[in-house]
Length: 326
Image (cartoon, rainbow, N blue to C red; front, side, top):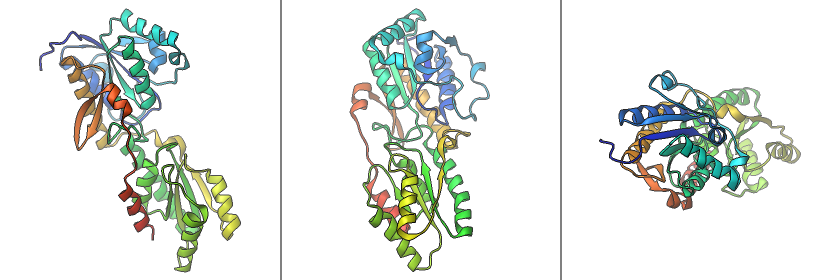
């Protein structure tokens, strides 16, 4: 594809929480950019680095040996200053100083909100969705979700061995302040008896205590409860279970282990597909877009339209979890 657009020099940054596969995306942006004759610049530390002018040229060598690494070689950070009008004006001015014709922003909803504000100041942008929570409305899949889910699966398998051996109840907290995708999929994959997510209100007696009692009446001696961090306090839940039925649950909070690790094949491939598509949009002169995964296809969506789209937990996935928890 010949580059017929006015875009000749681009920047790439990673923003927000890190996700496995971000490096695969950076690598693909750089290599696709060079393939199509673009100059590619890496912006360190997200919007903070943009404000500080931490911008340097990237080459094929810059992205060698990063495909299998978790995290992001460009680093990432939160940037309170960018939330101010003055900070954003400065960021746009610095982009112009470095003669960046467009910036590819790899991150989640907060990163895309920043991208939209930059675009309003005349800086063309493309967003690539990367967050382990899989909670971006305009896309069915976000980079990092599969790797995080496999990390959770491995951890719960290990905890389940001990739970079975000691005939106990284990409460396992996974990430997901506002989205239960990790928790629900992990519950199905690991055969959890109970799953609590932010999207579905629950009653402790009906949805936790009664299933445990029903299981015990059938001779069941061990239970796994998977909880998204935004659903409830695991410590409070454990106290309620102990007070009601005299069982003392063990609480395991998986935490940031879910963000790390070498990305899975799925995350590497989708990161590559999304990133090449992002560069090809710029080559065609298509800017202010979000790259999305819909129906097994990588597409681009207008930035403003993408920011208004939402998605919700599949009701049948909830039913599947309930059926398999018997």
